[in-house]
Length: 224
Ligand code: CA
Image 1 (cartoon, rainbow, N blue to C red):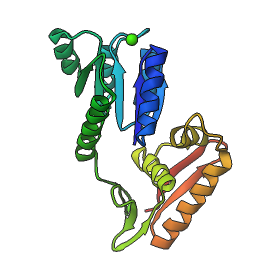
Image 2: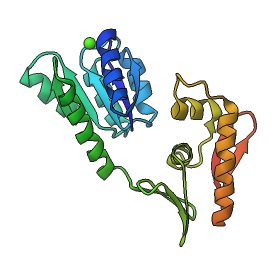
Image 3: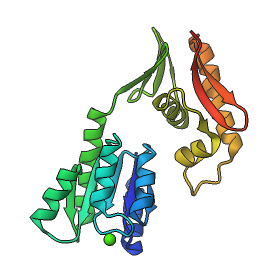
């Protein structure tokens, strides 16, 4: 489960990230609205915690721009004042829930849990491409009756490829999105996982393959 914290007050942002990490989430920070929107649009987050008062672009604009661009990641809005107008405006802009500062960590965690469950229902449980289907909750890649189990990173790589059919995904973006900015994973980690996945595709006898675009990255090909 990956959470994005968009908050310009550094100490609060760091505290939130710490709380999330202690509770088993992967968490990233963005300190202004423009960068927050960029990160949100990557589509890799399960929940976004979004402050309203932000430099460059406020939280209301971030969430409404996300929705305009068809990004449906659940958003928990942090409002500084307990004002009904702010909450209503936030929900109208497309936020899913809100929390008034200051709040207890338990309450934050409960809201994040609720939103990630909601996401689980809305987001496709199964992704398909060509003759393949990826069953997210079972961590299984299937073709017809045949299926193989995928490890966590394999799942994430496959999910990213299947979510962006026909698009070339660069090694750099795979590294960043799956291993994160703090990791010291290198290009060859990506290659290793791609080769695992290729073996599994072969095992399944799928007509789908992972193509390499030299010096660029990878994409799924359906060889019909
Ligand atoms: Ca703020």
